[in-house]
Image (cartoon, rainbow, N blue to C red; front, side, top):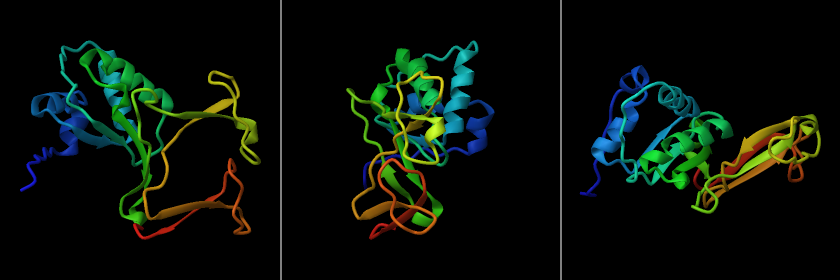
Length: 180
């Protein structure tokens, strides 16, 4: 026995009323959960409406955000809306993986000092060396860091000719390693 308890509910139960996710975390003192970005967005919209939720989310250690692109705006709004419910800003853990890799292969490890990392890329530089801009610049696209690869995994970005591209370039993702 591991001493762990798993609480599982059908996704339809939470999708019908997204704040049920918070109810469950509070009720069962959940420490770890996950959802794709759209679920965080659904919770944000529900929190923006009148609700009577009085959750204590101080128990949360990790909320994985994976399964689809992670939006900096959605994550920041989620953290802001749930701060009054004792949720730490360092709880969100953006990650990348795909069915072919069997699980996540990169994980951003937040800290209280750096709960997230977002790169603000000039949208006009996407076909060459990426140009970073300040947050709020009108020509930027925010990209949330998904963290480094897990031990045993190597990732490289290659161009159309199969050659490895230098850092800060967009290309095809090649993955290899023991964990894949």
